[in-house]
Structure formats: C-alpha cells, structure tokens
Amino acid sequence: MQAIAEPNLIPEPDKPNSEYGWWAGNARFTELSGRILGAHVAHAGLIVLWAGAMTLFELSNFNPELPMYDQGLILLPHLASLGLGVGQGGQIVDTYPYFAIGVVHLISSAVLGAGGLYHSLLGPKVLPQNNTFFGSFGYDWEDKDKMTTIIGIHLLLLGLGAWLLVAKAVFWGGLYDPHVADVRVISEPTLNPGRIFSYLLPVRGPEGMAAVDNLEDVIGGHIYVGLLCILGGFLAYLLLSLLLWGPNECCFGRGEAYLFLHLGRSGLHGFLAAYFV
Image 1 (cartoon, helix red, strand yellow):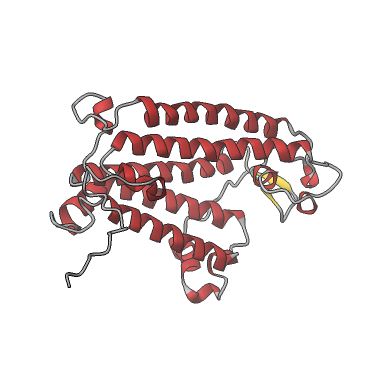
Image 2 (tube, rainbow, N blue to C red; image 1 turned 180 degrees about the vertical axis):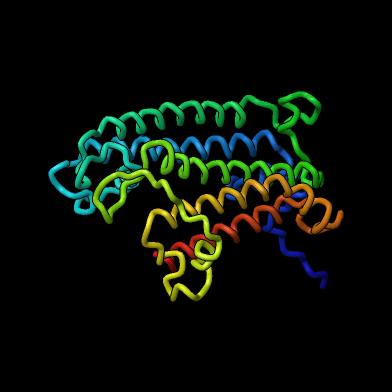
C-alpha cells in the first residue's frame, strides 16, 4: 500500500508563491518588504496610541492629594521621575506637561497609523532598491551590506535615546531624586568604567544592576550604553559584514533567522528584567 504523505502545515516563507493563512502572521510578508514596513509602522502606532491614551486616562483619575504609588499609576510616575511637574518634597505642582505629552503621543499615533495603513494597503508591495532616497529603504535578505546597515541604524538610534536621558539629567532640568525628594541636575555623572561595569559582575551581590542606589551611576551607565551602541552602530558593517560573518552564514538570506534571533533576545531581556525586579 502506498503511504500518503501528511500535508505540510509549516509555512515556507522562502517560497514567494506560497499562500499562508492569517495565522502565519508576518511570515506571509517575508518577500514583501513594503507590507512588512506597513506592519511595523502600524505596530509602532498602536504602541504610541496606548502610551498617549493611558497617560490621559491616568491624568483624568489622578489625585494630587495622594502619593502616586497608592493610585495604581503606570506612566505618570515615569514622567515624574524625569522631573516634569514636580516641586519641592516630591509634590506634583503642575500636570500640564503630562497632558501635553499624552496629546502629542495621540497625534503621533494617528500619523503612524496612517503610514501603516498606506504601506499595508496602497503602497508598493516590494520597496524599490535604487540610488534615490526612497530607494535606500528597499532591501534583500541576502544583501549583507543592507542587513548590517539596518542593524547599525538601530544601534545608533538606541545610543541617541540613551544620551537623550543623559542630556535631560545634565543640561535640561535634571531628574527627580527620591533621596532628597526634589529635582536636581546630575552635574557629576559617574564616568569610572570600573564602577559602572561592576554592576554586571557578582561583586554587587545577587541584585546586580538593581543594586544601583544613586542617579550619578544611573546616568553614567547611560553614557556608556549610548557610547557602546553608537560605536557598535558605526562598526556594525565592518564587524558583521567583513570579519565575523561569511557569505553563506545561516542568518543572511533567511527572514526566519532574523525573527528567531530577535524573539530570542526579547525573551532574554524579559527574563533579565523579571530577575532584577
């Protein structure tokens, strides 16, 4: 009797003519760079929409007579930690910055949502690759130069984000320090690499990075994180494309490999955050 092969239920994204159901997620768009862009932009819009809406919701229920930790707030304490609207003794004296931030996030989410809809429904399914500005956004999974360039750009943006917090702490009004119950400028951030990187070693005990107890070390750590990310961004092409990776490595040319790596890293970050918290 001839055996009947079982149907292959695993999607094969490397076949451009394959058809997938909705359950396959972004695997349907492996060869459709324009649609992947639409999904990413729309996802960013949803995140920003939640941040703006939740900020305004918390603000509408905020009671300045009670401490924030007694009100079940999520976002307002983070905004207060940046020194926004905080007076002496840690008292909230001005809620307008929170309102403005929430509204800006709502407007930004509308722009991102429109961009996501355009690239998901109306824009080109595959982004063009040419020498124009818009052509620079096109890519091929097998193009090592473009893949490492994308990684480098992400690292640069992460580094600049870390340095924005440094600028806020050192130049733009400072941060709220719970030790003194007031907002203060961090004029002397810790620059000693031995002290900063010791938080990654067992010398700090089981708490690790959670053992940080002063803003000088927090800002000093962000200085080094930003520096490493920016240097990594500039060196991404050299290190990844020329030194570490061969032309036939598994990651290049397979969108699933990139997805696997990113999901694995996200899971690791989640476990690290849970441990330190």
